Amino acid sequence: MKASFRVLILSLLALSALVALPVRAEDQLPVLSKEQAGAISQSCDSIKQSLKKLQKADTKTRSYLGSLYEEFITDFISPLNLRLTRNNMPNATLTTLHSDLILKRQDFAQKFTLYEQSFEILLSANCQDNPEDFYRKLQETRKARTTLEQSTEAFRMLLEKHQNAVQTLKGTL
Image (tube, rainbow, N blue to C red):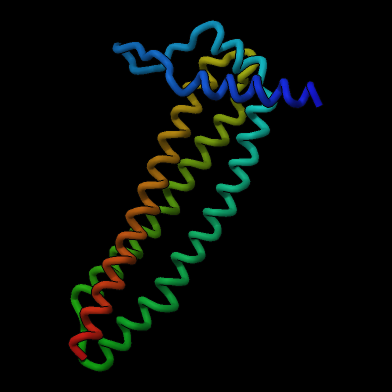
């Protein structure tokens, strides 16, 4: 029990040490102190285990979101636009949003692939022998994840615009 508590504390210290690191102006890379690098090296196994759990959860989330996005487009949005067109009531706003949603769904898939590749590179890094390189790769993975989060937010906003456009159309019928 004490050993697992110690590993947990060391992991938390290592991860918290990574939050507020000084940065060199010339290359904007974080500078790890010897203590921070040591904490990463010492907690390498538990850090990697935590990252693998995160990767597994992210993969499930991506699968869920990807299928949900596809379902929205194929089961709801496309049939609505087709029905409006067949009834000689095409709606330019809904058509544009439909196209934007398809593009944003493709963008999401591409950004997730880049994030997943970055994550795999991070997991293959040797954090025990080279904590500085590991931390640099962690930062790159964080950036890729932020970009992915922005993509999901953009998709959500497009869905919200689509919902508003549908409500506006409903009011004119």
